[in-house]
Length: 358
Image (cartoon, rainbow, N blue to C red; front, side, top):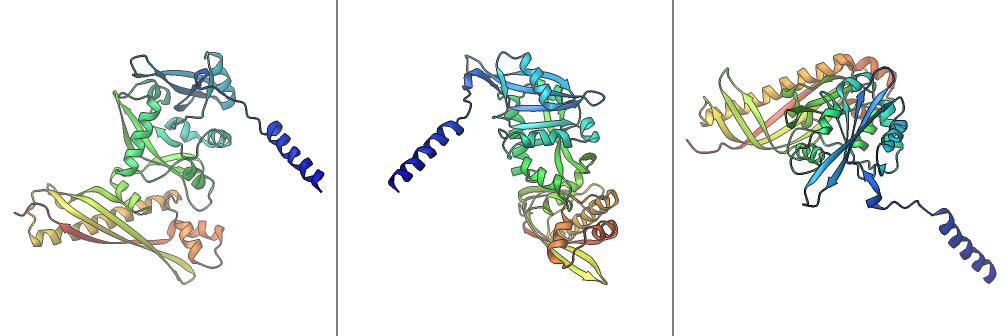
């Protein structure tokens, strides 16, 4: 028995040494890309652009870009290495961007390549570029390398803006799901600046349309809780109100009426009036603002959801909500019902403060 234990210990140690060996890579001997971009290059070819940060003696950070095109992503990486003095690796990848032209043709094969790379984090941020991905990545923005800058831009708009919380892992879940459709932030290069232009909506792995700007607030509010965001309310032709420090929550209810599901989303919004134009914040005006905001949000939600149903996409994941609340859920029947499904958003707005007393 003692000899058997010794033999087992020796086997475990030998296995750890022999099979557990991993090829080591010294940081100074590799190029660690911080961002990658993909553009349509004609036919079945895709152009791959990578950005590598360059740390200068004065502690400033520059960028160096490499580009190559091929039918296969791995082959483009091989071509990139042919023009680089150091091996290109993806271990520090912050952002992957796809041109809108390429996304319209489908990004399934490229997504599959990133998914299969064990060195890439599932927290990787992904975005669609309204324009050329290579031109976006060639530019330097601020005092950081391009990959970090784009990552911070998207993160900031997730935390305090109207980009829904997401990452590569969330995108893949929706991409492969039968009951929801993926979406990604749509970014645009504007001179020497980059801005969030909207939300790119997908169907069957292809970009089909951009979410309207006026729908972005209610879109995110129906996906998750909002905290400390701002909403612009239009009461009359020239009367506007800014509601700030908004917090929201929502609850989904599903009923079966005559064999068909009906969905009601109860959306609660709390906020503070910070600015008003052409309207005084009296008690009567505050009530008018509250009711006006409820109606505007409900109208925007209804228009947005009708657009989704017409395009037969479900980025809000109503299919998951119905399946989890109804017995005998049938996927094929759901696809037939969804375009005409009754979905209603009911909004309750509470104005907590009205700003400076007039």
